[in-house]
Image (tube, rainbow, N blue to C red; front, top):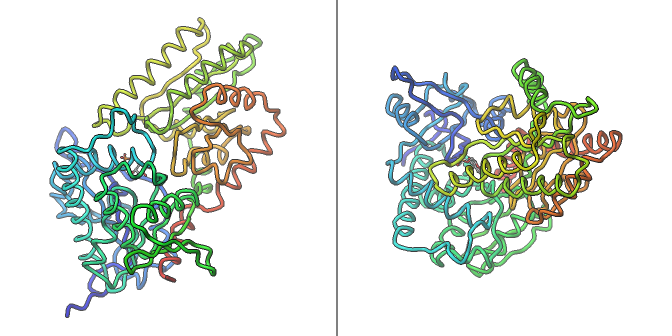
Length: 505
Ligand code: G6P
């Protein structure tokens, strides 16, 4: 019997996700540079060391390890040079094990299954007369997805101390909980979905065997958690419809409990909030001030020399974010309410995402095309109605947040949407929020927002008009309420709550 303990350098807390907390690029001279990412998991894991929740803390990084995939050339090179355990100097001290999964297997699993199938199902993005059609290519990709999930399960099984707690993230890794339980029944395993969960009628588009395998994979966890009650319910409904599972409510915690094939899995709900402290500090720095000056220049002043209003959106250029319909709604506002012409500017920050997929590249072109069309229809010499930024720049996002009079967050479907939560936190002068009822954030922010049906251009245009017309007093009051709801569960608390719930059982 092999004794596994944290004294042997094994971890008491493990996180697994496709995208890790750091990414590498190779310079012209062959040197590697590391770029650290942000987000809830990064804050959560770093809090473990401080909180002592990670166990005895013997291990570098405080008893926790993060297992992630190498995503590109730079990452693969970093894995080659480090043997997979990344240099803590690149990760802010965090122990990170990066997996170099064979390139084709990775591409099939990430681009093919995760981003073109599971993402599409949960965000209900298919244009169903034509897609999906699950053919031989899909079957090959699915086999890769299985291997990619198995590589994660193997690495986690190797890294975990006896009885450790493992938090598996998202739709890339749905099979990991089940596979890990086979390898290490001693572990406490949680799965967290950052996406919505499709209702059964849509979910059942997947081939039956795959639909079952995904659900059984997640049900391998002791606890499966979601961002909202609505997504947890979607998952429970799919378990009942596809697997014949029974769903009950735990009287003590109020959580749903799914019983299936002799195992029970609790369903948790943990809404991720904005990191108010970090955002306020970061938004006050010099680089943000510089960008504010630039954006003020882009916004300009109206004929009476008053600063124009700014409608701001910040997104990955992501199909589910509904950027094109957002632009059409803005055009409709200018058409129906000529009083706004020359008095408003739409700042659309649409950063590149998943550019390996043709449908994302096409969507990005469509965003530019529609923005140009609006500018040529309505623009005048001194007024550009839409200002589009296509290059990722966090400082510019924060500058846009600070200046926004109206934030437009109109996704078709979204797990949470943190932009809706971040804008009110850093807003300089109060900001009205136009929010899709299909965003997870709607559960918490709905009462203080102008809520829209994201498919309805007329409805969205009217909401933009009302938001722009809101008086300063009520706007400031709404912003304060939004900010307080948005920061109710900051990332550290979100993470530690999950850990505690998983350990309690
Ligand atoms: C969503 C997913 C994350 C993912 C992110 C960026 O928020 O839930 O898992 O990391 O999108 O997408 P990408 O494909 O660039 O990692």
